[in-house]
Amino acid sequence: GIEPFCSQYDPCDKAHSRWDGSQTDLRGCSQNPEKNEEMNGRDNYKQKAKIILSFDDARQDQYTAARELLDPLKIPAVFNITSGFVDGQRVFPDIQADPMTWDQIRWLNDSNLFEIAVHGHHHKNDLQDFLRCRKRIFEELNVPDREVIGIASPNSQLTDDFIDKNYQMYQQR
Image 1 (tube, rainbow, N blue to C red):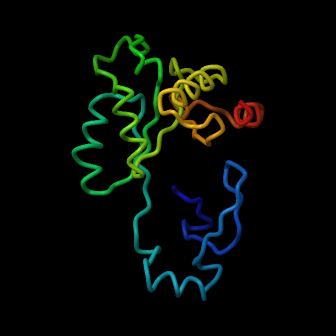
Image 2 (cartoon, helix red, strand yellow):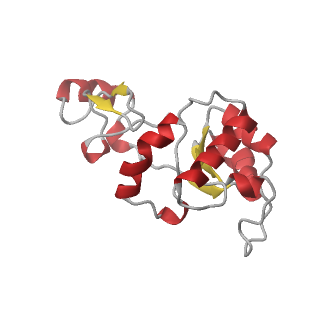
C-alpha cells in the first residue's frame, strides 16, 4: 500500500500513526541522515516523483485503461467505486459512460496493483451512503467486513467536522 510521508515527502524513520490507527515504520528522510544515505543508495526517494492516480465512479473506460495501460506498465492506482452505478442505477443522469462490472472490480482488487475505495452508493457525501457502498463492495469482493477500505469524497466535499464526527462510526460498522 501507499505509506504516509513526513516533511517534504521524504519517508522518515519515525513510527507514524496511519489513518487506520495502525503503526508504520518509515525510513530514510532528511531528519535521519544515516537512514537517508542507506535509502538513497537503493531507491533515491528524493529523485523519484510521487503521485497517486485515482479514478472516480467505476466507469468502463477506466477499467480498460487499467487493464491495457496501467497493469502492463505496473503503475498503481486507486479506483473509487460508486456502487449504485455499478449496480445499474442511474446515479449520473448526464453521463453516458457504462459502469464497470463487479467481475472487473474483483480483477482490480485481486491484482495487488490497484486499491478499491468507497465513493458512495449514490455518489453522496453522507455516512449512510458510504456505509451502503462499503457493504456492497465487501459483499461483491467477498472480503471480511472488518477489512480497512478508504473513502474518496464525491466532489471533494467532506469537511474536517464530518470526518471527526463520523470516523469512529465508519470504522465500527
